Each structure stands twice: as C-alpha cells, then as structure tokens.
Amino acid sequence: MAYSGFSRPDSGFDFIALRRRKGVTEIVYDDGVARRLVWRVQGAANEGSLTEALAHARREVRVLPALYAELRKRSIAIEAIAG
Image (cartoon, rainbow, N blue to C red):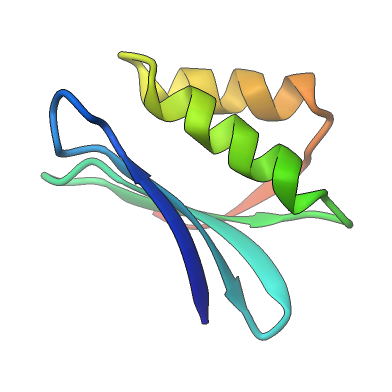
C-alpha cells in the first residue's frame, strides 16, 4: 500500500492522501477529530492530476469543498466507500 499525503500547514489537523490498495487508487480524508472519509477513484485518472488536486485542496480553509471542485475541474470521478 502506497501513500502520498498532505496536511494543512496552519492547523495540523486536516489530512488528505492518495493510497493504492490492490491496484485501486483511493483518496483518504481525516479531519483529526471525528471524520474519516474514503473515496475510490473511478476509471483511469492521472496520478499527477490527483496529486495536484489534493495539494490545492489542502491549502484551502474548506478542504472538502475545494477537493470536490478540483476533482470536478479535472473530470475525475470518485465513489464514496467509507465515512
């Protein structure tokens, strides 16, 4: 299992990462308090685009809305699998 993760530099709480499990790419979000969400990336998404989307989202105050906007902008489909 490989991880590529980012934390919010100012809060230290929000954590967002890419991971590969059994050949499937997943996005993991943890707010450090009460919420852990996992999404499966649908189709063949460029890992560079995914990494850029996560990096941009983690710099924003509202990480999840920024993540959804970045994924939509890049036409990357996700499916919720845990949360």
